[in-house]
Image 1 (tube, rainbow, N blue to C red):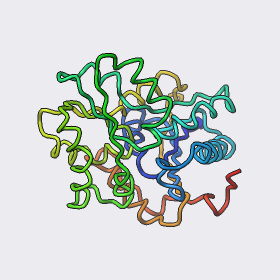
Image 2 (image 1 turned 30 degrees about the vertical axis):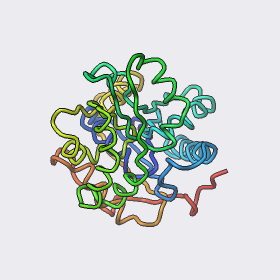
Image 3 (image 1 turned 90 degrees about the vertical axis):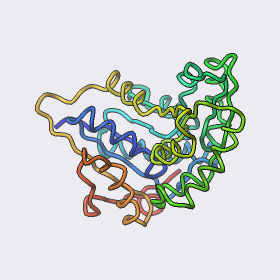
Length: 276
């Protein structure tokens, strides 16, 4: 049996990337950890995010023999991926970062808005992306502190969520932004709502496809005849809510069978794995 691809995020958000990976690589087995005990990562110190990321990666490698680690989380990528690559130098580790480069190319007004968590917006990698790829372009950084929690609660298109989206998108539109970058993997779950609020003249950039392409480039493919699969784990105690959100994010369009609660397992957080 081929070794699986390991992946983790602070909760449900990374499943937007996992859905795309399963569609592109149906023969691969994937083990996904939703660190629901510690969601959201966005406002946490980098040292905490590094500790969570290191513990989860060790679990994926030591327990599941993961052949690669995908980090579909912009905040964890900025805070922890460099450390993970030092600790696991021979393991492919694929991170996620905001699509500043394609946004700078796409803008007609010269103004781009980046919607993300505080941790991502204030990270060194964000500053590097702007400096390298956005010369001559105004990049507006808009923190969206409520969006992750709304997605985790399954409020994908409610009046409360629409108000939260308007609160963040409105100021960017008022400053003439015509491209919006989704700088958190939770945010694609809100794309229809964001598009409705932003209007037809605004381009929305999501880096999911870029992550999938990178995985196909660097991760050894499953042998011919392999049967793919997905195993989900959650570190928190509210498994039913996690399962419901997974059903929505993985089952959209009926291209992937919904995930049942019975297929979920829990590990650690505070109940099995020690976060040193």
